[in-house]
Amino acid sequence: MDSLLAARARGITKCFGDVVALDGVDLDVARGQIHGLVGPNGAGKTTLLGLLLGLSVADGGSLEILGTPVRRALTAPDGVAGFVDGPGLYPSLTARQNLTALAALRGRDARTAGVDDVLDQVGLTDVADDQARGFSLGMRQRLGLAAALLTRPRLLVLDEPSNGLDPAGKRHVHGVLTRLAADGTGVVLSSHRMDDLQALCSDVTILATGRVVFSGPLGKLAAEHRELDYRLLTPDPHTARRLAAEAPGIRIVDDAGARHDADALILRALVPALDEFVARLVGAGVALRELAPVVSPLEAAFLALTEPQESGR
Ligand SMILES: Nc1ncnc2c1ncn2[C@@H]1O[C@H](COP(=O)(O)OP(=O)(O)OP(=O)(O)O)[C@@H](O)[C@H]1O
Image (cartoon, rainbow, N blue to C red):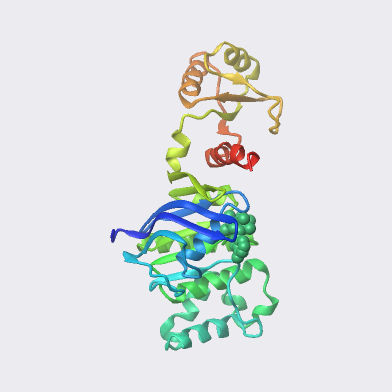
């Protein structure tokens, strides 16, 4: 047992009839870590999150939640909260009544349970007395998160929490998750939004057809020896283009399908070759206005790691 881990899975398998949803999955989620789960449709993300929440049991492998082995029973492990496939809410109750009812189920009254506080944290104070039935997807997601917060979880499990969120909702949710993690809660969330994962997570696990194809720090993905396309903006594209054509390890790929304007070059390179090229540019007196990957390292890794397997299905 490892008490520093909020969740530890080893060799987890889960089948639905002939479908192998999870095939020998390992997962480590440290306490205080926001861990992203990413993968193509049907990769097994929701199935894995369901196991962490005690909604189903694995066919094989071992699972520890908050240092305690999970038994083969369908119960939410102590200290775990969250939801898959959208939060369960009472549509005819208001947001506040939903949370008050949940608190009452745990033998607490709304005030001591902190109902107003969690409504404020997710940015729903203004609609606290509106029926959940009229809530948009993003508002339901935030209310579901508020419900999870009421239990003061030490492991929070969320399936696509960014679905339907407007920018203000996203800011609230990101703030809540970041604060929880800073207080030592492990957070596991799935998302198809690479920008969200990049902004929130320290670590990611990439699943493809039920198998882990990468698990580790986001920084490791960026540092992997993989060429990325970079967009370079300069006031002197003519000279930059000439120097790029001469530079070792640099390919000009302006027609790579990325947005393009006259002052920009799209270059494909490994990081060391790019570093050397930038030094050459600066040495030649060519100013740099912008240099950034066309797609994030996470998205590039996601495509590189999952596309071959997908096409082989
Ligand atoms: N209850 C079930 N009965 C039968 N098959 C299921 C069930 N739940 C999941 N599956 C299958 O298991 C595989 C993994 O599904 P899962 O929902 O975990 O993937 P996912 O990565 O969450 O996908 P998405 O990104 O589309 O939500 C899929 O092939 C799916 O069809």
